[in-house]
Image (cartoon, rainbow, N blue to C red; front, side):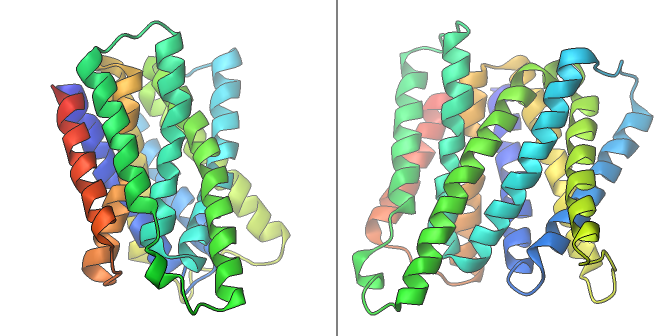
Length: 284
């Protein structure tokens, strides 16, 4: 039960961070949003390092964490861009496909969570698929440019799912040995990659005109979500906590519905019911 609660808390925190980032990316450069928020995430992890004593990872583990940081950076840019040009309540749920990588890995590693958990996995995934379906009546009358933007947003979201699925896998395996270092190494790598690209391309990293408190909140929430997810995988099945920790798209969709007034179809509401039923099955 504790593992499930930690994973759900990670989803809530991740979803809040993603929603704020998506909104900011609609009025600001996605590169500035990602680079500055990742610097904040790395700083938050650095503060956590000061308060705990953990041996830093080395060798192969360090290489995997650095590679995860690069993949995460690419995923962040692609996902934030997708949120900025697409319909948030449609694009966001696609990210749930990220669970296929850690869930498959957990089962291959010998995890057997039980029939109720397998049923919960299936119900949850089906619910997210329903949520991600765009109502047909909303597709009519749209311009060719809008359709191209929508297709691009979906492609970016799929690529993000692959990148973040790898991240979940590494956090749920390598990260358990030194969770604070795992978050610090990956977020520092992401910050260096993104900030380096922004500076090399002449975009600059000036804070002038930036919504600093929101950018800082995006990064801190992201780091906290990482800590919560690693903690959940440390005491629960990776195959189960990966699904419960990957419901941030549902959180984003709820925010979009409540705050941006994006309309949902009846089948999408049915998807929410399925997701919550799946959560119950995965939590018992």
